[in-house]
Length: 191
Image (cartoon, rainbow, N blue to C red; front, side, top):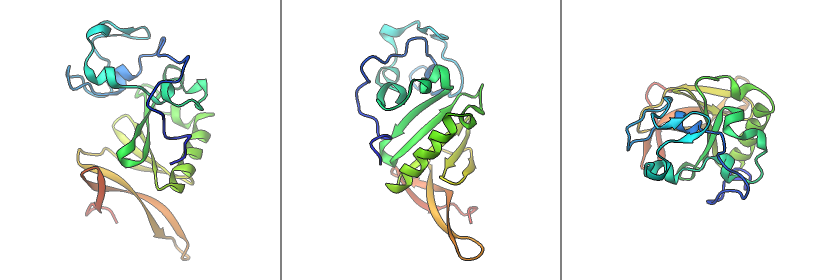
């Protein structure tokens, strides 16, 4: 995957969460338990965590793409973009998690153009760009966005080649059963 997409493991010097708490809404926190797309009961929205010193390990271990990617412009800060970028190294995949309160944020500029550039870079290294708009997933391809719907635990996404009318080969995205973090066979309903 392009170096621009794979974040380092340490935060970029000078970047902080300062005023951003969107991860406290978007992600599940199993230790609490807190479901996805609901505000954490310990979050003081826009300010920070009220139990920061004793926050769960899931929270301690998390750094969003904005904090980790040095080439990412400031407008990608989640409190501004309304998206939290993450990286799934086991799947060679950038994941864009969109705030359910602003489901169209990813389609606005300058974000959409950058997402499309990431899709081109991802395909060159057999990677993916996956976008979550609430509970629905989209595979972002260079020439289109493929709606995948909600994915269950144990499902993944595969990028496949298909013959288009006229014989041209085009890319598509399908839902597959996930085996040990690796895509398996397409699901029966996918054709």
